[in-house]
Image 1 (cartoon, rainbow over the protein chains, first blue to last red):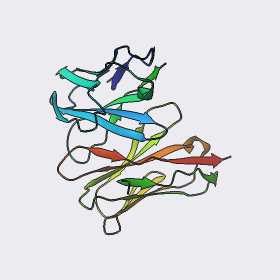
Image 2 (image 1 turned 90 degrees about the horizontal axis):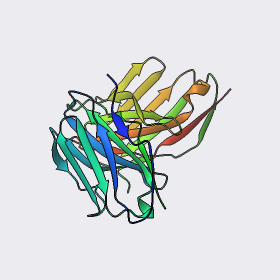
Image 3 (image 1 turned 30 degrees about the horizontal axis):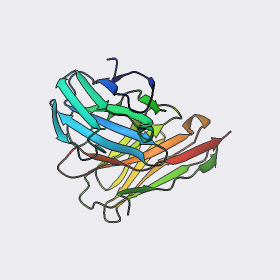
Image 4 (image 1 turned 120 degrees about the horizontal axis):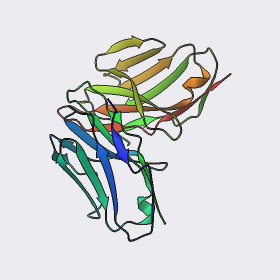
Length: 114
Length: 111
């Protein structure tokens, strides 16, 4: 298995532009999570899906952020318009379900908004 | 009060020593507890999980859980320079799949 696949690895964009981050979870994993990591705030859960349905989006910082999971093998996190404070590493992770399973993280997308 | 607290470190230990990493959590209903290792510039990787009070051993790693004290720890025996990384404590609450991460403890193992 190739693991959780994220793209792009790096993204540099200008303030005000739309940014789309992509994730392919591990096949058979029913749960997908989007996290953001910064030095100041650590790893923050943004949203998670179960069987393609958003379950908890309370961590999404503002209406500028949106996430979709149109099928079991693909999810996107979109920021529109982007701002410099959105600069962070965005991780996607998946989990097969069950209380005692940890996450498998993707390699992350390092986003820089200038 | 943060939901999951860790000493940010850095914790420095000599090669071959035992490294002890600690974590406290605020949600008394938490059910599952995880330790992740994150090398600089890389993504977190799961190294241990524990859900029952007591100790759980896996190779050089031992996780310890005390639910009454709301305390989780990770011991690394025979520490190696390759163990130098940030160790993240993560706690999953009851009835859901939302996992809260601590800020992490940076560990340096000196050769």
